[in-house]
Image (cartoon, rainbow, N blue to C red; front, side):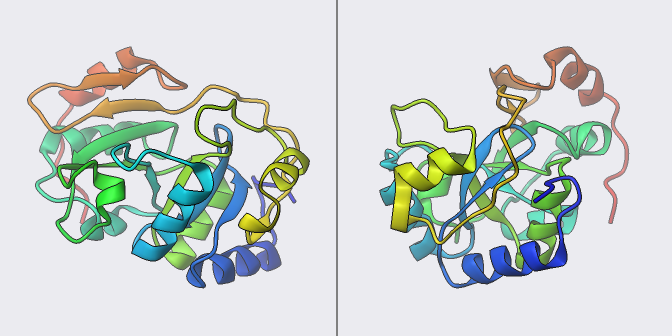
Length: 210
């Protein structure tokens, strides 16, 4: 399948798996990810068990539109909205204050949640269809990320409900992660979006879109 122009049947199958609480492996706009519905606490637990991820380490959530932030984050600053207006959709992950009812596995104890609106059509359309979903790198914690569907199927076998084959990922750099909760942006990981762009957009405050 083509991640930039996914067929309706691909979106339908992936949506059914996520809505059923299963894990889906798919190519994101950075690397392949293991995905689960962000609002399904049992699915998030299954994802962490499959990946062997530490409970205290949060995982990023992908959204399809700004309105989906309402179920994920609160008290978003005008500066953070400015970053969204200027840079999203892209490989920029923002750390925001989390809503109290999210799985604690996503919020690192309840304080924050990492959110991104991807540029790639597959992930954005899927999130629009099924709601926000967790997407963490397709590997067992401590191992290198896997870059094609065949390697993922072999490594995880029946632990993943569906693997979408989008070819080998060419962009191996992860998203840039920025803590947008304070008075200035703090870069937590350098990735596909350069921090100079973040710094310039931070002070370009506009009224948030409805």
